[in-house]
Length: 230
Image (tube, rainbow, N blue to C red; front, side, top):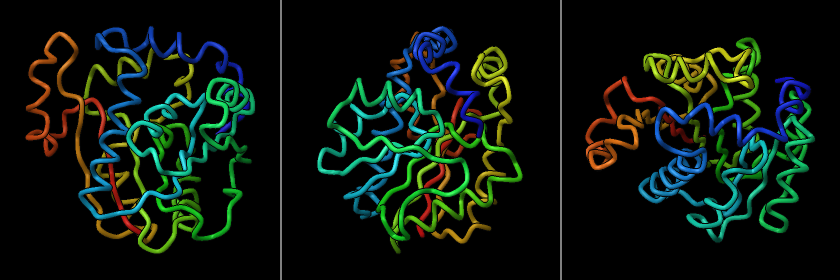
């Protein structure tokens, strides 16, 4: 995870992202909101607490308003390697989250600090050789019984692959199949692992989206999530 790679896109991140997802008929905010809403529902279903939440790879803080909406009582920490992105996040969401820098290796918090570690479309930017260590670091800063939540792009979905291949800030991305991500999470020592596929219908077919809850098993969604317990 290189700071320079993300710093150079920080100022125009939203406009680049918006252009990239335009084929779906949605905005970057739609994708940010569904992830946090899914996370809040899954935490409730699992009976998990969310007093202290780590948004790992938070970028410019796009998810902050949705954490404030769906997990209003949680203390939120946004961590990222990009100082410029953090500066933008602080200016946009002053007082709503603690924005902290990450050196790309060691998460700067004590063991057991967080109830939830959330990483939305971050791991495809992490070098393959560093992913096991990073999953262990996230596990370290989770309290016993804490929850890891990871969302990633699905390389089996052709529209997703096209979007990633044409996105400037994904130029060095390596997409992770859902089973690969799940296997690495299991090897890192997590338990109670659940995997779900998401985003099957673009905006033009949004009336069909209530059906997605019956399709989470189908490995053709544009994205997927993995929930796991320390």
